[in-house]
Length: 107
View 1 (cartoon, rainbow, N blue to C red):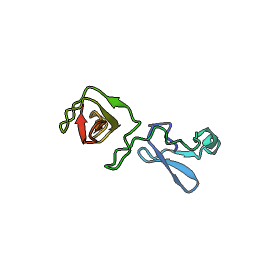
View 2: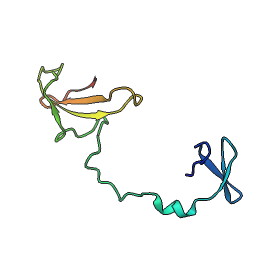
View 3: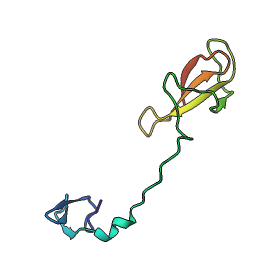
């Protein structure tokens, strides 16, 4: 991506040059900047959060500040997922370590 030096808007390519979407300014393509972009190696799945109904919670972090409504046990595995917009707190998905009951908690 290339941005306009005059107004900062994103530019698009037209006939071999970059044109500002907002102010119409033109610049040559920044071919020499292509090597400045960073790519990453393949990521491991060590930090993937499972939240599907059949997710394997065993081995995940545990919370001892919750109580299972089914059996009354005070410890559950949990995962965290951002289910709303970014300005809302994430949702915690719990699975009781005793009976396997599942529920979600909102912060």
